[in-house]
Amino acid sequence: MDLSYFNQLSNSKILVVGDVMLDRYWHGDTGRISPEAPVPVVKVSGLEDKAGGAANVAKNIAHLDGKVSLLGIIGDDDNGQSLEALLKSENIDSQLIRQSEAPTIAKMRVISRHQQVVRLDLEERFSEAHSQLLLEQLKTLINDFDLVVFSDYNKGSLHLIADMIAVAKDAGKTVLVDPKSKQLADYRGADFITPNLTEFKAAGGVVGDEATITQSARDIIAECGLGSMLLTRSEQGMSLITPNDKHDFAAQVLEVSDVTGAGDTVIATLAVMLSTGMPAAQAVEIANIAAGLVVAKLGAATVSPEELSAKLTQYLRDTGEQYQAPAQEVLHHIELARQRGEKIVFTNGCFDILHAGHVRYLAQAKARGDKLVVGLNNDESISRLKGPTRPINPLDERATVISALASVDWVIPFGSEAENDTPAKLIELVKPDVLVKGGDYKVSEIAGADFVLANGGQVEVLEFVNGCSTSNVIHKIQSDS
Image: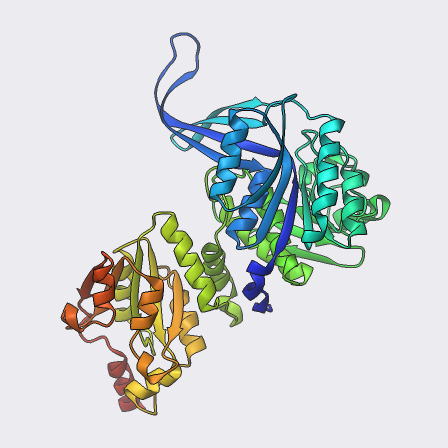
């Protein structure tokens, strides 16, 4: 798997067009049955609004560092204002068309003890005139993007989707569609279409053995003028079917919490990966991993780059491959975590031969906050500090092993120059809330401590595990050889 494409996520320029919604959640506890009817009484203790439908697709793209704009229809109402405010907080460029004939689509859910009790839908189908407004707006925006995602929830926004796809293809854009129409010919010209099994069968797809599914999908592709089909198959994973090839991907989730918005994550991840130039089969492989992460969460959730990176590291471990994000990208993700209110912990070291002491130490460091950043001395730095026979393991291998630990969220190498053998400059870039150092140190002796303390942070010294050291491991190997 070629992972160099991950360095280009922020270069993605994607337009999402479709049915935008406001997902509203009322959270509360259930302690009794109503005396008025045999239904539970939920005492509401919290309210949460999320972007739904096509807006959730855009949110997923933004959370994967893609540049995204959203085109859709809202009502002239409070729900529309709430949705626009949500999108602004997510740094999504919203090009929403406000009209007064129909309300903003809103889906209101009551959640108790992590279970959905009831859902209330507020909606009216948008008219062809509303869809015409979207089409005209699309014509003015299309040249600013590399790829267009149409998110169809059958609410009327994409009534004129055939014309919209034609506009995008005439402009030379890659087109992805998450369909709802039973007539997949409505999406003629799309490069990728992403039905689930239910939608596939509703559109005339035949489900049987693998050969039957594949041939049926190819018949639909040919009859409807489509490029390829990504068939999402629940616990059976996904299949990318083209006129000449088929690639199957096993499901990557251990426990399903909520499938709400899973299709949004799939098409969003696929779009971001394709926009980097990643081959389709590899892009689907990454989308499959993202889907496994999101269905383990409650509600219309998203996947962050750090989550995807950690899962991908685990996924690739057996292949000997790795993904090490560039430092600037990591620093951006750290800042996003800080904006979410998460406490950032920093520690550093050579970690030349990982041993039990390191693992325990890093777990203790992670326990001081929410996210752990590990500054890792590069090979030249270790040679300067410990002699010409070190390191035993090169930087790439050390970074792979450290990144695979559950306690570690990010790894950033440092030490390209002799004066940077300490992580002081890196600490100033990371701006951690907690600086952790292992060993017999005074706070005043720790590189970067003065910066962290001056910025209101904490500095903690942890004891190393007695008898556990890289030097001891090396001496033991040498004495036994």
